[in-house]
Amino acid sequence: MAGASSRIIAVGELYRKFANENTREARGLRLLLDWLSPDQREQLDNFGYFEVLGCASRKRYRIYHVKFAPNVYEIDSVGRLKEGVCFLPAGSLVTGDVMLAQKIALETDEHRAIAVANRFSPARDWPRMLAREAISGRSRMDAMNRCH
Amino acid sequence: MATQIVMDHTGHTRHCFNPNDAQALASAEKRFMELTGLGFTAAVRKGPNEIVKVRSFDLTAEETLFFPRLVGG
Image (cartoon, rainbow over all chains, first blue to last red; front, side):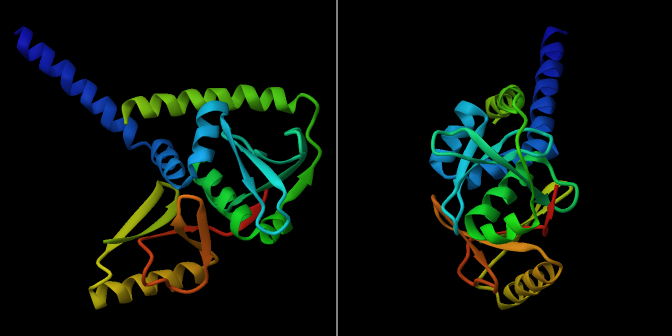
């Protein structure tokens, strides 16, 4: 009886692990992590965002791991948010996919990305709000990594 | 095996094919043309720090990633 019970628990755990690994969000995050450079991956692990260099202007952009747009900001030489650039791939994509498309667009075709983007000044409290959201995103990623 | 990864509502879909198989290669090239024709961007990873946008089918690419056209948010 005890053996059957422990088998049921083990199967339940396996199922939950499998389900977690196959959620849309988890698959998107795994793809993102796979395509990030080692430095970007470390940044994402530590801060909940990563930075990219625009291929044309050499400006630095920060891409936050948050579920809401806008999540891309041009940053100044000391890392302060300078201007928001709001663009994303069309359609209903998961967060990791959106972030990966934004990274590749800025690194390979910055002019096109900036041409379609809506630009805005970040509100004063946005850095704090983004940091809070990015940390919860980081928690999600940590949980996924533990299951991986 | 080579892979074409297409971002979609499921997270993404992977299409694996043998680049030494002429028929599989033709199907992969057709998929490339269809997706880029629909406005998808195709990108290939050349190393840990380098990703390039490709405008024509790359026979040598191990992984090609496709994402939909960009729009303002």
